[in-house]
Length: 185
Image (cartoon, rainbow, N blue to C red):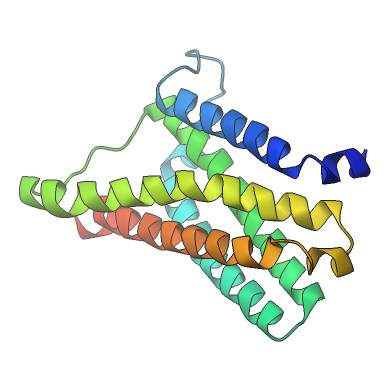
C-alpha cells in the first residue's frame, strides 16, 4: 500500500485537496442539513476564541518545525509539523461545526473598515488557506510514504517552504480577522 501511495503522491494530493475543499465550501455554502449536528451552545460561543488560540499555537509550531529542520533535526521538525497539522485539524473541525450551525459571522465594525480592511484581509486569508491545502497534503504525503533518506531526494524541502509560508501567513491573517470580528469592534 505504501509503495502504491509513494508512486501516486500527486494524484492523492489532488483527490484529498478536492475532497477537503468540497467539504469546506459545502459547509460554508450551507449544504449541511439542519439538525444533522448536535448544538452545544457553550462550545459554539467559544469556538472563535479557541480557534484564535489554535492559530497562534500553529504559528509557534510551524516556526518550531522550520527552525528544527534548519538545524537538521528531523525528529523535532516532524514533531512540529505533525503538531501543526493536528492543530489545524482541530481548528477546521471547530470552524466547520460553527459555520454549519451559524453561518459566517457578520462584521460589526464601520462600513469603511469593512470594505477597505476587513474584506481584503479576509479574502487574502481565504485565498492563502485554499492555496496551502495541496502544498500541505503534498509534503505530508511525501513524508509519510518515504524513508527520511529518500525525502531528502524529493521536492519535500522546496515545496515545504512554500507550504509553511502559505500556512503561516494564512494563520496570522486568520488571527487578524478574529481580532477585527471579536476584539476591536
